[in-house]
Image (cartoon, rainbow, N blue to C red; front, side, top):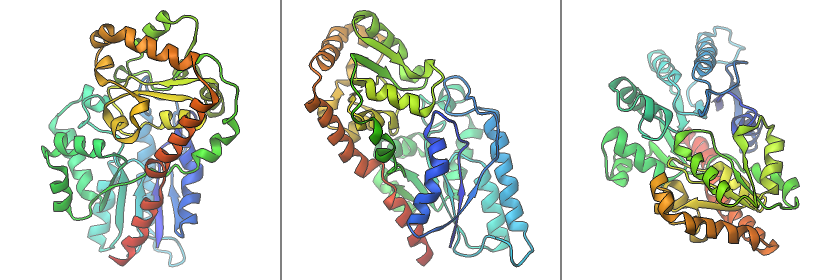
Length: 366
């Protein structure tokens, strides 16, 4: 079996660059032969507030489609060509090339398997697609078509899958939907088990009275709440990571210096930055909602209503100010160790790709 790895464009400040390096190695360590399918070098700066560049990503995916088509067109017996039992893994399921891949494989009679990791889409009302395009028939039907193209649709959290089922397919009973589709849907950890090793050099960095905002500068991240808290507690350092052009290493240094990594998100289907912060002993402070509610223990979660909107925040501001002041002023090695130990537990379930690799290996026998 060959695993054709249809990757995401690499952005230096995001995990997509790490996946370029680590994901092929982890798949190979799991006993799989890997052939990465890249889209080459395209404009890297993301559209402001977004996960990627709205124009550049289509250039990237078009190059990937050319590579995939050329593989299927290969007439050289000694050249690589998809065959029965091979697997195409999309690191972002929202990739229209999967429709063209399915078209070629079925018309040519090549029995491949396809899997995709879902991150977001129009079915999420807080995502860019959800906010700017919404439930337009073209996008909803495109997402549904992609879902049916995949033999395996991968989700990192039940929260994400519930939202996907409800908003895209109008299904309230997720378990019934999964049962109906017989193995087509998998909830499993993301392939990020390399993170503890990457962040290990930062584990003992001396802490400052510092709170970090690690998220994109997008409306659903509610940066205005973070900045208002900064005005309330000027004795502390408040750092917005995305307002500086940081390398990943510089970002990790800022995380490691911080005592608190803060979120007031209205959208989160996993939450990598909170995990990264906890790995280096920054206390992860999050609302009791979204994927956070499923992933993290109560001690890391403040009541959801405190930041459900800026109006709610104003009502509960004093409680949040008191909580943050105490977390910073009373921060100790014990509290930092609690964060690290919690990160270890969260990582084993949500940031470990072992079940993903097993699913790919098992697909050979089906």
